[in-house]
Length: 207
Image 1 (cartoon, rainbow, N blue to C red):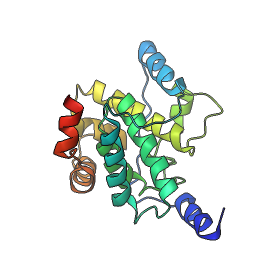
Image 2 (image 1 turned 180 degrees about the horizontal axis):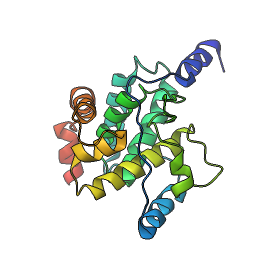
Image 3 (image 1 turned 90 degrees about the vertical axis):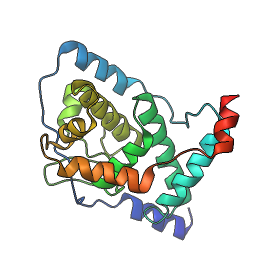
Image 4 (image 1 turned 30 degrees about the horizontal axis):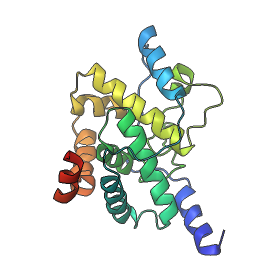
């Protein structure tokens, strides 16, 4: 690996305390819920872009990579992260752009971020989740695994709240009932990450 690439890698992986770190609260899970979440975590597949139209996927990756360039200068790292986000969010039934907004607020895209309360990684997952739905060897700093946990947890909170995004985000951050955190995430999502496929690609996908 050349020196510039190594420097970018180090910048991406340095630990940092995020500006708004999550603190999900540990709650008892019904056996069927815990089992379903565990299966989701254990279902390991190599991340890939999930689009009906591969041209749409390429356009999405190029645009998201451009937006993320200032935060992660290395193209390979950016595309690896974005591919994993799109895959894990889609398999959990989440909008990938929403997940990018959440990551921006939670960790600032720092892979090794640790909060004052112990939340870890890109999506600031609390370690108790490994005990509740994971396996003892799970490393929450591993990029794909952290995203899988985070997306599975957010999906769980959305299900609990019957699709109410603001309440689900409040649960995710441990601030249920307060508007500050949901507003930050939705603001980041809409201001920085919202994306609509170009008209030509939409028409192609529809044929």
